Length: 95
Image (spheres, rainbow, N blue to C red):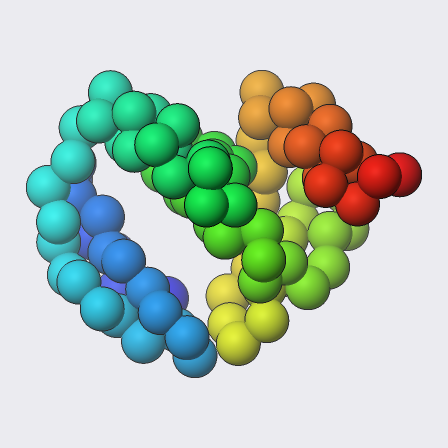
C-alpha cells in the first residue's frame, strides 16, 4: 500500500483505514500457512501466498478481486485459493 513493500520473508499487518499496525514482521511461508489455519476460527481466510484477510470485513468480490470495508486496497485471490475461498463464502452466507 502506498507503494511500500515489506522486506523479503516479512509481512505488514494492517488495521482499519490501511494503517500499518506492525511493519516488517518476519514470517516464513510455512508459518504463514499455520497462522492462516489458526486464525480461520476467527473468520480469517488465506487468499493468496502472502495475504490473509478477515472475511467479516469483506465488502465485495468481483471474480478474483476482493474489496474490504475501511480499506482502499484491493486484493487478488489466486486460482489455487479461489475454489476453497468461494466455497467458504457460500457456506458462510448459505448460498
